[in-house]
Image 1 (cartoon, rainbow, N blue to C red):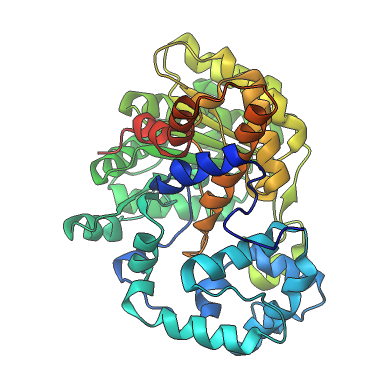
Image 2: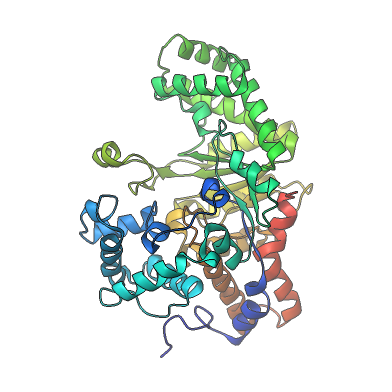
Length: 467
């Protein structure tokens, strides 16, 4: 019987151990998609307690606590940090076989050197020890990034963001690159007309452009992409239920935008057409800048309207959606490829039923111009766990080139999430190690070790071309 969370955690063979400890473990981290706060990094925030660092904004933990019968006052409510942490500690034993159980204890070990199992009887001691350590210099936001050997962080930023914290960090020559990512979802979020027109007013003020037509909307988008590029941004990101298999044209989209400016809500068909036109035009702008575009597809969000009213979005009430993805995605990528304006692209699916479809779709548009130009992205959100990672790796291996994969990201709001990269790396090495010991791959550790290092680090470094 193996002990829990030893140094050989998830590594089942001697080959896997060699690949991990001699190759994967030493690689720096390029976190090319996350939701960390640039302000917290610029301010070098000091967390008062482990609750602030661990539970603030973490809807993974919030969902588990609610499922375990914890009152909302102990989750997002007014209870003290210690009371909230205690409720989380009481919940942890009931997360067995959920990735939260692994992540929780990995994070306690890697950041705080605390080997204890978190439960109700250890809660007070762990709260006190970890909270005390967080007050020291190595545990500020910048210190936590250094501790995990993070080289690049790409935050997620609205087009109207002034990016002042990114610029501050660059001017201070902070050794970890903190770069913006262009997240333009609000540019085409026309379903709520009042919110949309208010957003356009703000966008117009930021750019100095009077937005009264589709052309002026696209002009502001180009201006903001140029601005992000100057600050170091090299990626965009889009969160969509799906792309739409509809006929669309700039002429029709311009007419739809004119309706919006008159205060008229668009029909569903007009909405879908408008979104696709804006996405196509944005994608052409990304291509011109040699950016990478990311599409996160398949989440059904804000399912609980009562809790949305009380707590707002991104609080733990989203789930896997069952949307048709393939035909519209193919049409979208093909339109851009036809004029050779398809940017480097990463596709993420939330429904595991789409794994093989995504893994094969990328092969349709890899054209030899860039190694791995189209990427099947790492297991995302609800799939970001051992089984999900293994299935993503296997689908990509079977139908594409795992060797060209740009690897893991955190997609997290927490500065304590970086052991997820270790988790991924251990799983990767374990799969390859088992293939070697089963005779399915040659026992050439120099070759395999280089492949592992590429997937963990070098592929991303070469692909994104951060300056």
